[in-house]
Image 1 (spheres, one colour):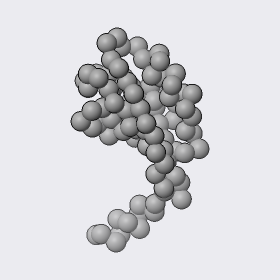
Image 2: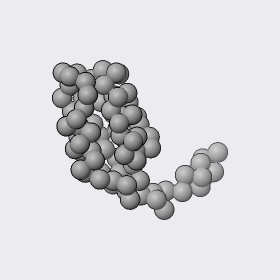
Image 3: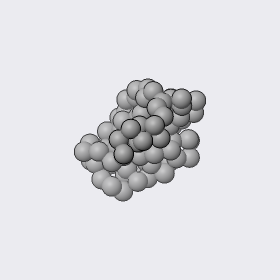
Length: 89
């Protein structure tokens, strides 16, 4: 299975423009999917592409002024999503 890393970004203030720009920048370093959340967003990257230096650079060089961005990460074990879907439908 393919394991992923979920990085939860807290964006203050939490505005759609900021999370959209953040998602675009993270996509350039391998992140594949994004979920808007109450305090920011979660972003998912294959564990093989997870690189803390890339994330730190994106946050440090964030082009919009007036936003504070923090993050934390966790490993998400890969699952056979087709099998899960087939069990439920």
